[in-house]
Structure formats: structure tokens, C-alpha cells
Length: 279
Image (tube, rainbow, N blue to C red; front, side, top):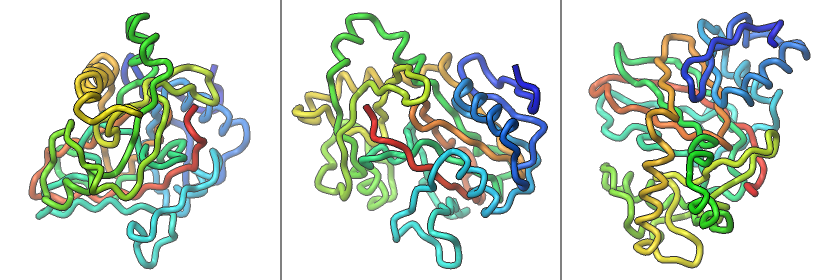
């Protein structure tokens, strides 16, 4: 199936390592088509031993769509405005992406995907977990699918901002709407625009409640969906190495950055690709 690249699956649920490609150079159309196919097939793909600069990351990502601009407070002077710097310092306690989530689902148009490169890694730890949300939806009962099919959920950044304010992770299921600066409403089950497959689309970091319901009314069912969506058999684990790069599909998988390296630094650079409104 693949003639230009080698694709080595990482787990049964999702994830594959891609070999035979140099992201620091221009990629020909035939190779890029195979990378795109591998990305759709495996949801998250990984590249090892890449000497890719930040501009190389951006050029690679632009093959899949327009880069998503960062808000001003996330921009770093001297970098281009689409480059997100994720720098967990040794003295830091909270880790960026500390819970299962899809990136910035509180936006009206969440990103298609993210390209993340390792710059400085801890001596051990700091792996990233990914979970297949097609599987999460497909394994629900017919009754649950019927109940969810027309439900919509409110996603916001309220709980993230509240946690950052106290430098501690606030438990889910509480109303943080007063702290939110951005929120959007999305279907609980979204249809992938390229594959046509359905994926569960709620996450513990951003989803606040179901539309037209209270936080407390929504909490029991959301708790079930959060737990179901991230079952071990739906997941894979990526162990970072120097010069590793990951590219995940934000429309059909969740991820979590493990916080298991206290007292060490982890520096990652990321660009995001503008997506489409979930339907």
C-alpha cells in the first residue's frame, strides 16, 4: 500500500511510526499523499531522528492546511505567531496538557491537528498518550448512540484558567463558567470531514456541560463518556526521543501529556493546522 514511506503501527488502536522521510526538506506530492493516508488511517503518526527547524514544522503542517494563529498571550517574541512554545520548567508543577483532551475544543473552529516537536526532554518520563475516538463511539451501545446523536456540549477554557489560577488541578464536574473567556458549542458526536466516520467529541479538560443542561445534571453522563473514551484498549503511548515529531488528528483522537518528571525540564514546539467547524 505504501511505496514511498514505511509505516510501522505502534499499537492496535491507533498510532504509527513513519520512516523514509525527511521533514527538513520539501516533500514530493506522491510521498505527501502517502503521509496523508497514513495520518487518516492511524490518527497519529510519529517521525524519529528529524533535524527539522520551527520553519520546517510550519512548512510540513501547511501541506495539510492553513496554520492556526495563536492568541497574543501565547505568542513568544522573536518567534512567528503560529508557533506554540510549551516549556515546563523544573520548578513547574502543572504540565501543559495534563488531562485527556482534544486541543482547544473551546474554539468555534478547533484545529484539524497539531505537529509537535521535542526540543528538550527529561531524562525519563514525559510520554504522551493518545486515544482513538472512532473506537470510543463505535463501541457504545445502540441505545447510547441514539441518546447522544442530537446532543451538543458546551466547551470552554474556564476549568483550565481556574486551575492555573490556583496552580492545582481542579476536579471536573464543577461550574467554572465564571472563569471562562472562550466557549463554543459542538456536537457530542462529530463526523470526520475526510473519512465520514463518527467520533466521540467530549473531553474532560474542556467540556463543561451539555447544552441546555446544568453542570451537575451533565456530570454523571460526561464522567461515563470521559472514562469510556480513554479506555486502555483504545490507546497508544509514545515515548519521546530527541528529534522526535508527532502529528495527530484533533478531530478523532484525544491525548494526554504525562506529568511524571518532577524537577526536570521539557521543552516542546508546536504548530496547529486550522480545521473546520465540527458537525
